[in-house]
View 1: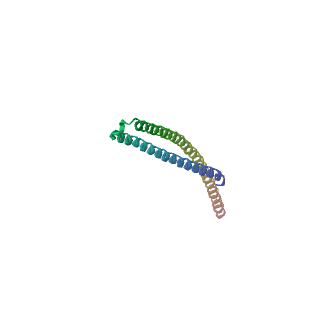
View 2 (view 1 turned 120 degrees about the vertical axis):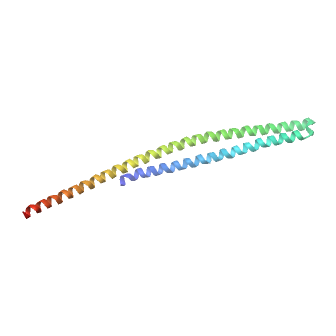
View 3 (view 1 turned 180 degrees about the horizontal axis):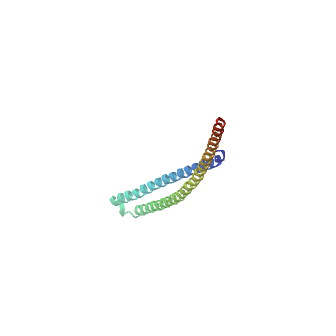
Amino acid sequence: MSDLRPLELAADMAKRQRDEVARRVAQRQAQRQSATLQLQQLQAYVVETENKWIARTMASDAAVMHHHYQFLEKLQHAIGYQERVIQTHASQIAQAQSALVEAEHKLKRFQHVLDTRKSTIADKRMRQEQKQMDEMASQMAARQSRQAKEHI
């Protein structure tokens, strides 16, 4: 079984790597969710600001209107930035998920090799045990045969 130890270590390492990649996927998804929530808050704030602006009667003042449009422009810039952040997170999630699939495949390959080797060792051990039992049975039969001839 000592010849299986390197494979067992490799499989264990592959499992730890897979778990780490899965943790990163979950982390990236949480970051995207947070960014999406921030985007929704910005969009809601734009709607709220527009509704307040429409309700105001001071809209006739050109300076106030100018500041209002500058403010909305900055909000739109923030929304665009947040949308790019979400796209970046989506890209990172796709890469992390791809790495997770590869880590899963790597782990399965190690597990398959390890299982095959264990099966081969078990088969070899069974054949050796069967051979020993056959030899013992043959020796016992020979002894019994000699003893039967001696008694005749």
